[in-house]
Image 1 (cartoon, rainbow over the protein chains, first blue to last red):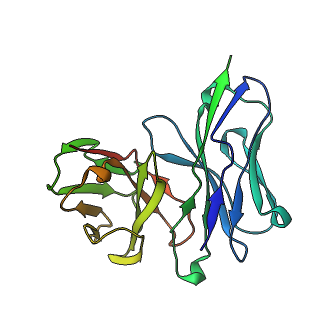
Image 2 (image 1 turned 180 degrees about the horizontal axis):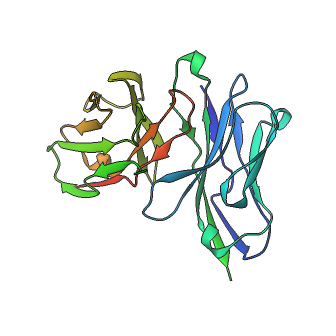
Length: 117
Length: 113
């Protein structure tokens, strides 16, 4: 079974500083990888996804993530954080459709980002 | 295009009661998934429906059930509510089955007293 670890429960950064949120996954083959963001009282919004190909993927709101197979990691980065980025971020892993698990995602426990002005 | 709509947004029930939550997916989306979010357990997959068929089910007791209608709208039902069922229940829809590109609603927050 797949699993996702987000080692940082809470991160605080200053506005304008760079950001990196860590994500490690466990899966026997190449998984589908996702980052979602959740603002208070809201549902989750997809930031970016990795299925195959280029290991550096670009997402919305200036976020990017890099898939590193050797490290089983899919860290999320942003070069300059804005106060509106304060939210909870979830890394998730899914398995390819041909394994029959469809849209069953396994989420990490989340990292809460606080942005100081 | 309207997003995923969940109703009701908030509800309070007492132990032993049952509850039905509704989800209207984005127009054209045929896959609907349900997740439970709690502070202790995080986000956990409940089940997924595609074209009125349950494709996957998570590790929840039989008190949790769902269905999907021909217009792709979905409902989930929890019977014999327990205090531990208090959670945010999130519905997500997807255009393509099995891609994980989920569009989430704002959720239904259930409080069980």
